[in-house]
Image 1: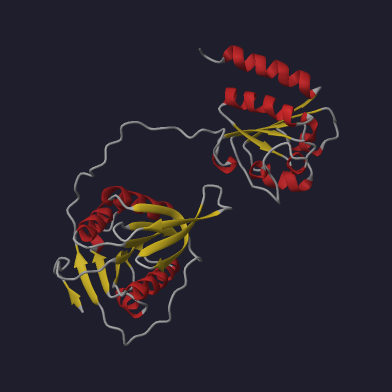
Image 2 (image 1 turned 180 degrees about the horizontal axis):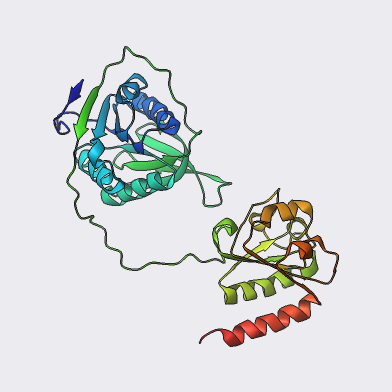
Length: 326
């Protein structure tokens, strides 16, 4: 059924999927939402600007809010989400883990004081509570977040995590078309806190100081951390340094580690095995310091220095400290 009316306040929908443009992932999140709703005895709603609304009904939605095509921009779509959900007793909202989905999820979580889990893996019922399994910032460890019955939750799911349901054309649902007047967001930016490159994921920083066997041990990485702080850079490592226990595994670059492409990659004491080169060769500027003139990484570097590493780093640290403003 299609209607031009605003969201009927008499209709209570507590599980929602929000996605401006419907994709395969939208139907996967809808399938997960349907399973949670069935466990709770609730209904499922979808808010979308572009997509097959009848297919959404066939694959699990009880209620579909279609933002008008002329007002399908991100800001206006966010207004449709806010206006629709504000009139509902919302228990759980699913969003995409793509940038726009994460922005929508964070915005609604703030506006509604909801628990935000991003990225999530699984939502299940435990009595009157919801238990959401999500990933920590490293993306390698799972955590369980318990949401009590009196709190709502927002969870983002990557494409491929959820499970879409087979289409059932006999299902019946309600489709409403909505427009929204763009309103000023009740969010004020008081200050922006820059990412600390010393703790951030090495794939997300613009400069990296990387060490290998040539740094000599954990103390060598202490020096690299000092240099990295002076450069506003992160610290990375070769597989050998990680295997020797000199630095944590999440800082490993290479085929068995992470692929990075910073503006500056300062390689210290790294010979440059093929698996390491595979992980950093797309860096914009590569500077390598090594005592071995035959080190493969020197051939890939934009600037290579064959010199004693400890002495070179000592002078580099001093020069950077002298240039650093007080």
